[in-house]
Image: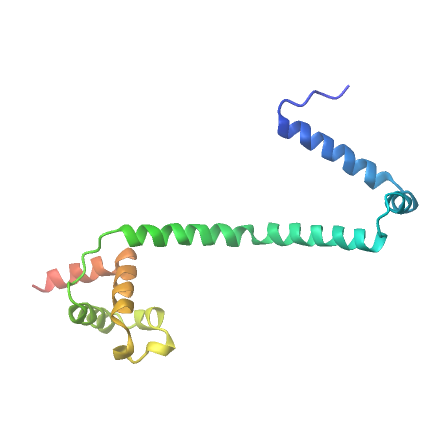
Length: 151
């Protein structure tokens, strides 16, 4: 005698597994006649099942993408609430970013897209955003330490 399920989820899973086994063991003719007896179009029923399976597969494959998106949004939300130690004016922020990129030229392609290779076309908001991201990555801290050592 099978064990009694211990929770609602286990009970539901047991029912679904039994149903799946019943369908898997049924012949094509039995399934076709049952669909027709219920007044359904077999082609439409097959298309519906195909769509359900495709959607389930797509959902399963995209779960990591959705989780990454959720983590990204959480991180961005945290960054928006965080206080950053940046220069007060846009001009000073632009000078700081220019100084960082001059000292660490390898960062330039990572920070600036091809569209903004001409540093002057960056908006003030973009400059501030880049500086916040660099601070999150610890680059500003390293830069500050280097500046302090020079003094």
